[in-house]
Image (cartoon, rainbow, N blue to C red; front, side):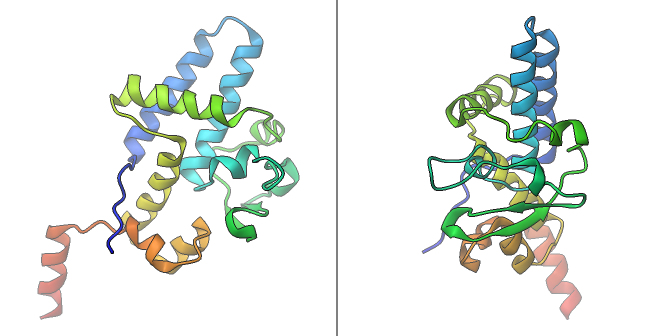
Length: 183
């Protein structure tokens, strides 16, 4: 059975929706609204540049604790009890500064974060995306930069390599050039 990656987001598309979120924050009149949008932006950054699941950022019921600032270290982030109760380490995004780190735990609702990202996708990119699309973008971006599949698997917290394999997109020109190099 071949798995199909239905929704991915490129670096350029992420930058478009990220900038749109910044613009919404700037236009917000109340300080509480500005703070909420800033937290959404931080979560989006973690989804796209660290490959985190929404539940790993904001928590989920009693099963997954929200990300806390103590787990955000200088170069990496410790993710505890993610899917399948497996801990892992992911890279800390360069844009996740100390001001952003101080906001953790974010204390935002997963549904409101999901709705915010979906609205951005519809208004800015003119297509339907979810928060998980950001995570797919992380995996796809790493694969596009020729990172080894087992590294991507480790960073994404996949237990099966075939799950990670969905991020390998066949590039016909690259395949032809590669075949020529072999012979």
